[in-house]
Image (cartoon, rainbow, N blue to C red):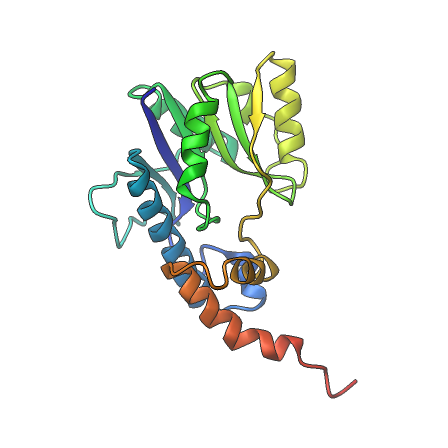
Amino acid sequence: MRTAIVMMTKLPIPGFCKNRLHEVLDVHESAEFQRRCIKDLAALIRESGLPLYIHYASPGEYEPAEKLGDVPYIPQKGEDLGERMYHAVQQTLLDYAAVIVIGSDLPDLGSGVLQQVVTELEHSDLVLGPCRDGGYYLLGTKRGHPEVFRGISWSSPLVLEQTLKKSEQAGLSYCLLETRQDIDTWSDLVDYYYRNQGVSKSAAYAYAERLVTKYLPAIMAPDINK
């Protein structure tokens, strides 16, 4: 089954992306981490042999300052995340039998997961990768299924629950992957650093290691004024 990967991401522009990391990082550090996540995931997908399309969000008419080889960069269209994902899925399914939608927040996704999704789509309408925060890090489908993109409380703990409910109401079969945690907050980044310690040599991990080494000691130190 001809399958393509769609990465939904914000461009790594300081002050525009990874805003929840700004509780600790400055805007340039957050943007650099985003840039490395995109690069690492693109390399992982390249190894899988699946074609990649990057659907990006940007402030205004800003275009990518850096592109990854011949990977197509396509501006997102839609008022909310659901509309933007649905448009990307529909556009991709014009040329492929199936599409796997991911974000750019899980650089240690693993190429084996992508192959698992391709296999599961042979007998499931949807494949979803649950996040521990109630969202999902991956969606695989062979059709647009607009119902699973509409009426969802995006960026809330209800995303997966509402998506599954809508899938069941529409009579769609689904498969759930292993629950993972993508990187939205500082604590997520620290978790990513520790779970890949001694394993990963990726660009995103190297930068995460630098950031954790820089900031964590001060955060963990007792407040001497107390």
